Image (cartoon, rainbow, N blue to C red; front, side):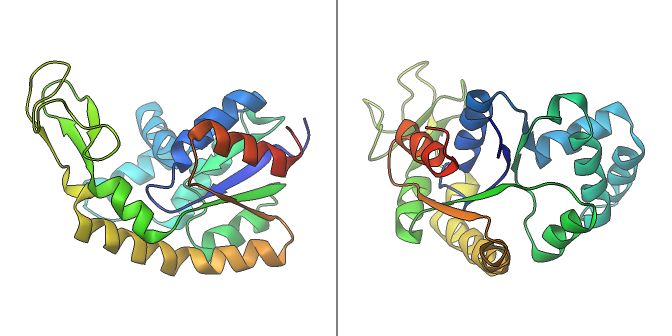
Amino acid sequence: MSQSRIILLGPPGAGKGTQAKMLAESLSVPHVSTGDILRQAIADRTEHGLSAQTYMNEGKLVPDSVVIGIVEDRLAQDDAANGYILDGFPRTLPQAEALDELKVLIENVILIDLENEMIVQRMSGRRACGSCGATYHTEFRPTKVEGVCDTCGGETSQRADDAEATVRERLRVYHDKTAPLVRYYTDAGLLREVHGDSTPETVLENIKSELGAA
């Protein structure tokens, strides 16, 4: 299929990571997650990876120029010749502009959107077992006994990142940084929007329909 050089945008909790993996498998192209390729570049001790490690060791954010270099290196690999799903990049307008300057081909930008209150409900209700890592949800998938893992009997609790105040702050930052990206790719005629309030399988089919791949 053509048109498979894709950026996935979406707020935390909208299911973007899940969709990126499913879509990549469906289209037989690599799922390029910036977190994963950053860790791999560091492990492989590439030039950009070593640079990133230096910043991280000093407790500093890895600058755009280094992240962009790592993304560029990844997209130059053979398995990305026929397409890729970019997940987690770009996050800001300068990063999107840098991709254009490097002439990285982007054919579609999919925005998986979901209302803030639905995201807060999804994320703040999540619980995880401290022993085996099994995950639950207080409303959608509760444990049989509150606070006790069905799988191993360990204690379940809310992760710090899932606390309501933290989720709302993450959403504020996301919308501040992403609004310019949405305008940028809308103006470029690349943006397509899919609502995330369905099962993962339904959302995937809706994305593929937008891509003309259904």
